[in-house]
Image 1 (cartoon, one colour):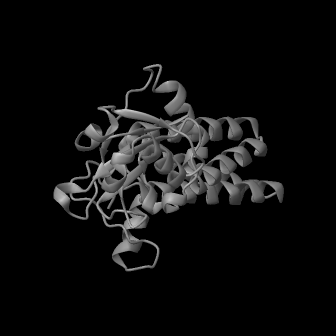
Image 2 (cartoon, rainbow, N blue to C red):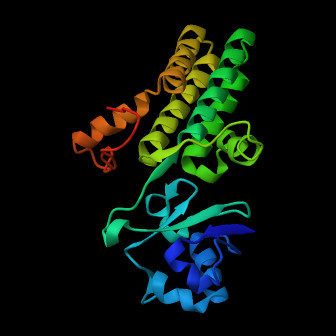
Length: 245
């Protein structure tokens, strides 16, 4: 069953529980099950049937408002968090686990290097599929799922959660997926120089992110934000530890 982490101010309404197991295929259904179990909690989450503006729900590290809202799909192993706005304002605490990102980059680099050495385009296609699927649905991201469900629980990799915006990282992953897709097509069209050049661009940029902490895709995202391009509405956080722009 999916679980919802309850913030301290709301725990008196759920019998003091820090986590509550819920059923449902979407965030909306999960919240409905939560308030069915604990009806006294409902007025603190909903007003006229709608989620209150100061109530922020996160799926992993992602604010569901930046996904598909309360219609965001969840799975049995999904972890939701209810986070009140800061000081009653409209700004929510936003965090990103950079260990998950670094794990993602490590898998990308390793698999693409193997693809280059063995001259196997199907590995490039596999990486492209993983990145594109993970961009569309964060819960379906294979490499991050390995981190969340295997490496982190086993203590192999420690979480590194810091204030950050998830959208630029998602955009960056999408760029990686587009580049590896283009590389796959080039290799299938017997254009090896172009194909492997695109692969090496992804390897180098992923290495910059993994070893230096510079996210090139995030840099591009924030530049587009500064230029006012529609769809790039999130500005850098002033307290973000990594420099993206």
